[in-house]
Length: 260
Ligand code: IPE
Ligand code: IPE
Ligand code: MG
Image (tube, rainbow, N blue to C red; front, side, top):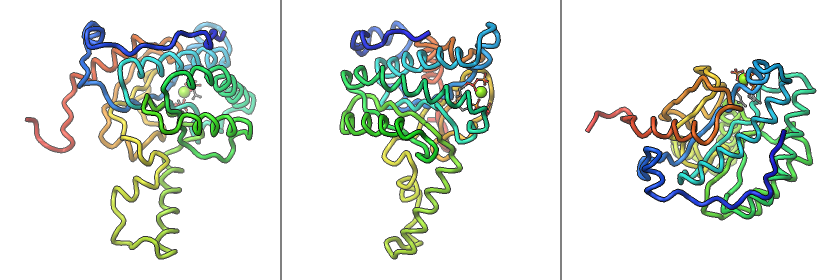
């Protein structure tokens, strides 16, 4: 398990001809893709492996798909790594997930710093290990202000938590006299979310077949396109990602209006 990543060659973005060879064109690339990376456990079980081997393989795929998003020219990819509900899992599995995240942050550090990635996270800090928070903060600070792909990890993320936190923040502003109730609108509310300043997802990819959002970006995904595959996350990869983008390119987004 675990491929060497520090010796990876810096990626080169695809040109228009390469995109065309995949059936893609630049003006149909989603700005923001949000990914529900599901099925690590099922993948492992089907092979007689432990769940932890599924998660380890899943972490490698996360890296490959993040890089592919940069190559095709997405502005942001958000990877759902740990939900607020995942705390229901056994402590041993959670420990392993944090261990993997820690080694991902260590091994990816140079790679992310060498590339033009901007690194961000969304989710509640409470409950995450101190050491992990330090690494996350460091990567966020070192890459702030860059104009490459925003590689966003959703960690200890739950949409309902996020909406409650935003409501509290709005209420605190009102109580302090900084904000009039009549001035609360969608943009004020959006500015209180963990995703403040980020574009809404255009496309949500979910692996392993479930047709649900699992508390992921409920506000932000109001008009996102959905794409679900039966493939489990450890078997997903750059090809699967581009396949989803080809499908997305054929969608008609109406946002409540009419065609044409
Ligand atoms: C996704 O894979 C990873 C996390 C939720 C952390 P799962 O662990 O949910 O895999 P399945 O759904 O049991 O197959
Ligand atoms: C969603 O997967 C959360 C992540 C991918 C981190 P789950 O495996 O937790 O989703 P449910 O429980 O099947 O809805
Ligand atoms: Mg799952």
